[in-house]
Image (cartoon, rainbow, N blue to C red):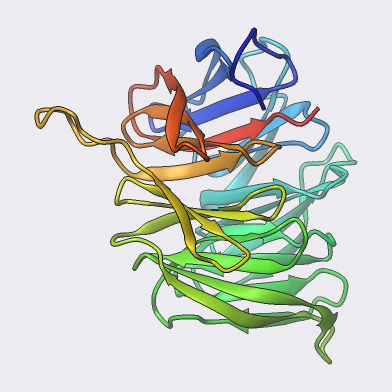
Amino acid sequence: MTVNGNGDDSVILATGSYDHTIRFWQAHSGVCWRTVQHPDSQVNAMKITPDRALLAAAGYQHVRMYDVKSMNPNPIVCYDGLGKNVTSVGFQQDGKWMFTGGEDCMARIWDMRVRSVQCNRMFQVNAPITSACLHPNQGELIVADQSGCINIWDLKSDKTERLIPEPGVAINSIDIDADASYLAAVNTEGSCFVWSVSQRKSLEGVIQVNPRAKLKAHSRYALKCKFSPDSVLLATTSADQSVKIWKTSDFQLLSTLKLGNTDPADPPHGWMWDCEFSADSQFIITASSDCVARLWNIETAEVKREYSGHTKALVSLAFNDSV
């Protein structure tokens, strides 16, 4: 991604907020070109479909699908009737199905090739789901919950494996890198756990993972973890108002992205709720509770653009700059 020159239709950036709106931005200029009302609830999580046509927004008891390119203010598909907050949403790599996880302790698979919006598979865990991600082989859904458990659900065999890095400490976010080499998780105590992912499966037919690193990543709540597309970096975000960038070669700290208060009277910049890397892994966009999204140059740790317009905490974003 470059940050000079004119806007580019190939770049999709959307932010979701507690102000019940979704805003679409020109990533290069910082100009908001479209605002969609999301009146039913705050937006908990968002994801762009693999074909870049739709944006999925997860809220309270529902997922709404919006047309990315048009100015249509209304969702074109609505998935309703889910229990409590939907906290995670994502897609199979060809867009054949969508997965969701929520505070009703259920992970769900939704077939997107049929007109019906009925869930066709479900997996129940023992505590509210905080995060879910799909293995790059498209065969395992990994689900984390508030009890501190990570569940690996093999979609073919329907068997599961469980990881409990710190019993009773809620996992806030999980991610697996594009090479399927590492699985990462962050929890409410600011710790980040990393496992090496084996190419071999257990006797039960589920992927095997082995502890690789435990990082005391943050002094407060860790909120999100995300691997870069090239699998070289791992980002962790936190209530301590920072994003930390770790090298996956040795899981040592590369840099800390944090705004300094130049004036003691300035308000704090707020919790860093979400982040997304650019396709070239050189930039990262963050969502913060100070109502602003920011584009950072990872190498220089400098803010290159700010996206300002929300009136309440900005807690989720979706970004795609793949050509």
